[in-house]
Image (cartoon, rainbow, N blue to C red; front, side, top):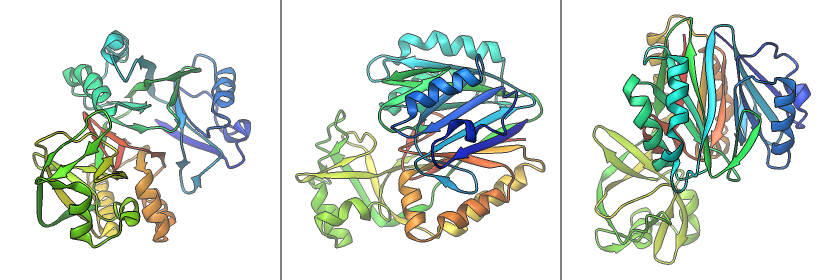
Length: 351
């Protein structure tokens, strides 16, 4: 298969797609002002080509912050794209669409992946998607876009998840998740006084969550929302850790970017040697694949901000491009199979 990334920093879609011909699947990454126009124009340029899209920054060797980016897959893939609506209340109502698409593509865990862009309620959406994908052990990579809008096949949806099931006819696919954080000392907490709907974390070991965070890290209330770049929380999930970012301070509580439940066991995380972690990921992928056609990744907005502040973002993109044709989305939350995580990178590699 072949991946082409086209971009226009000024938001000119025709400029972005200049090198794209006969695509078999398209992903659109636009800005809030031009999203509707770009979705319509892309469908007019490539009618009946399966497509999904969202509002967000994109990248290959450079970041497109406010313009438009388009990723095209061609030469040996089968794809079906669609949407599950009512994501905040009942996405399972539309599960028949995904079942039909999985059967149409006739994929397996070795050669097929699902890519999704979501407007919110990620954990519920991922559970719904996984209920179908698990029967064929099909992996999933995706993320949350901005402004509560996604597109599928030329139409715009709110409160929905747009997805594509993609089969590589010329080789394997494999997904990866990268965590640049490690557990900080022996801090372990039992969460309580949580609000599932508002993603609020009220108390840690019976004490106000804000105060516990401040006392350990010696930061002011104003510094909490940037300190999370270095010190997010983590929820233990077997041998894995799901990262939980802090969104804002709410009185004595902390509002997070993913749901925390009463009695969840949380740990405090600290930033590790992210250059070493990235190099380990690259080595792992190189060991798994002797020939790579494409890599599509989703990097968290907070990772982008952290890397940019540390003058590492361009170096990171250069390092990833050593693997081959690499492009992706800066998301507001990352999806990996049935897990919703923060401050992470997830990717799919096509042989």
